[in-house]
Image 1 (tube, rainbow, N blue to C red):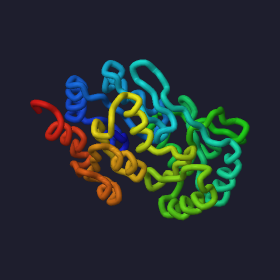
Image 2: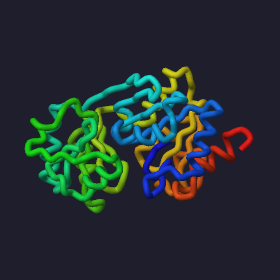
Image 3: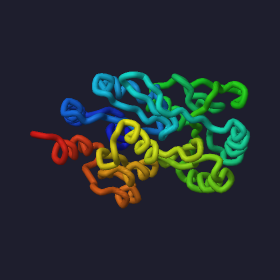
Image 4: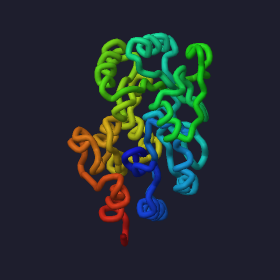
Length: 264
């Protein structure tokens, strides 16, 4: 399950109904996996709320750059950006007027701490913002992911421009109208989810994937059952096997309750 716009509502919380359905799903032997562009620190509170450590749940963080087992703490995947490309990202910050930021442990690092979208990310992940004067020398390493954030009106142009400039050296995508995700090459929720399933002895047919945004398309296409939220982008709906209710209408809980769980 993706988080924002999928599992959680507009208040960034899991509603009581969906929570109850997910707890019943775990009792019936279904393993939960949260898959998000968020860092681990921003995902673990939801995993704790769902008691995923008790039921063998998994976290796919940074869209697949970091994968961990909630129960054992085992890290299945850890991939970092090529540090040689960081000066190029800073050049794009200067050219575009957007803001470069990154996550490390429990902090967001940026040269522009007052940016409204940096503050939104801070709120979403419950992470403090740390201002740096020199991004290259002051930000801790390794970096699993950076973000370029800014006005949704200019985001598409700069996303295309960065894709052209960076080519196959970095995966450039957007997850919200104001976030450009900057990831190591070939990092995508879809292949990451399928590799995790393989390591757990499962096939695509064992997997249901829920999502609403462009960075969810890969896992929705590759999962045996791909489910788009009612509030999903049109391209996400086109890739899905099913369309459920919106995240404001308990779409995840409703689908599982009516189509998957026993005696529900």
